[in-house]
Length: 227
Image (cartoon, rainbow, N blue to C red; front, side, top):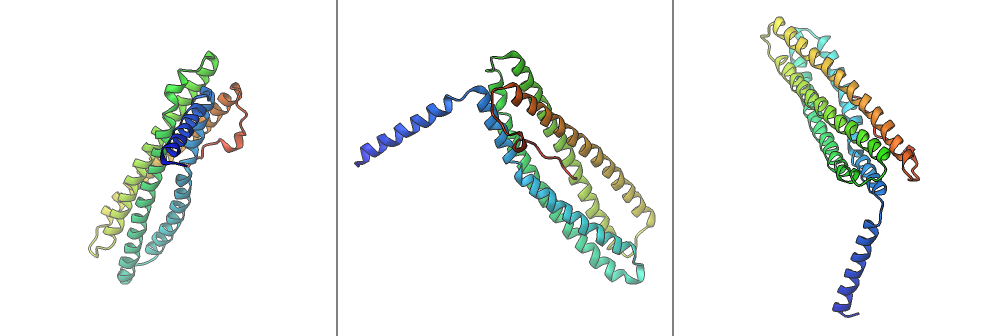
């Protein structure tokens, strides 16, 4: 085959691909974006497990430090430095986790312009409700991630304080209180995120059922967070 004919074959193939994509219904296009958004959250799920493991390690170190006294200050310093290293790892995982969610959101927002093409008004309403819930879910995640990042910074500051031999107990107490307040905020944001995840799953199920799509919904669910 000559180069000219080969290039013509490529162009024809490309045109066929474009035609195949454009022949999809609006419902099918929305479905494709929704499922790809889920796929892009796979790294997020992986990071969740790794962060949870780091949390357990950090908690074990903290408990060891609490059981020591100043006569064992060398051990306290060593354990504190190990805890700081774990906090650094948590920050890295939180960053990777956020990148996964951002990629998911970038894919998801593409459905907004397609929703306007839906002819069935009831189906369009279902899609708009689904879109709004998912948008709120992303916003809740960013609040959660920001607060979690702040708490990790506070943890690092605490372990840096514990490496100082001359340290006022009141200073440690105040820092722990601030850290605990942040933990309470994390719990609140986490509950909101999980609630919105459940609401989105219900909304997406309603959209799929109202459309003519033949979807196995077990493969179409978003995940919650354990943070």
